[in-house]
Image 1: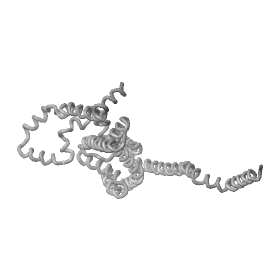
Image 2: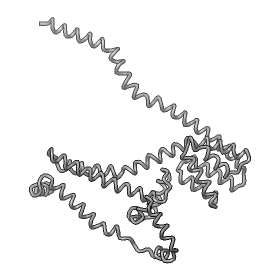
Image 3: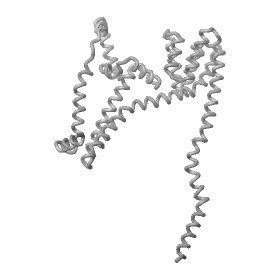
Image 4: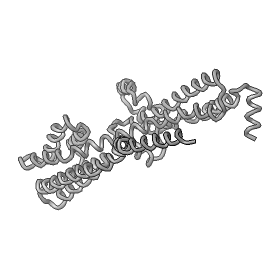
Length: 326
């Protein structure tokens, strides 16, 4: 049945008949769904806030609307996930990637939409150009059209994943040094809040991601938020087990009234041991990784050197025997 429909479309619309029909159906579905997506639900609280807003507040709102995220405010109801769990998961992932802005979720989904549609247009143009010069099957046209769209749609997600991994690696590498510096500051007589500010300032040159996290903790504490909750938010925001254990140590020290310096000294020594263990683990893995390269680049030349003369002699002997025979 599929072959019959395909042949009928080719006979009626030419070689690109199936592709044209699929494109028209896609455009029709977009036009049908677009009014529903753009229809914004009435928000009673926003209307009441607009009624009670002072006269000068409207101008401030208009000035704020010139930002990148504010321009997408009108499309927020379909650029953001409607379920609270999905929205929280995406926002946490973007926080771990280093995008703490309020509009980061909106910009992320807008980038996926724009890149997906843009790469789809490029795929359509490429398919039309190729089909005009060479004969292409329907499967090839669909593949060359939809593959770029899929790549463009998942490209922001791949970028965020790489950013999360890079940022977590940077935090893991710089955390033992930050703990040593924090221990020195606490033992010198500074409070924990002052130590966090100093560590964030000193870590900026080598580990900017870790410095950003400490600065955010210091700013939230200055704003009046409870320190225990701020530290727990930091552990959840970073997503690194070492930081979570550090936060648990500080929370228990504050709960039971033990010395913060003593807790930092013990945990700092533990972090130094972990860093040495990570270095030893990488050193032990290195010979295994070099085995494949050794086999590829060392064994074949060695075999040629050792067995090559013998193989050449046997070939010469067999060739001479064949010539000297009957």
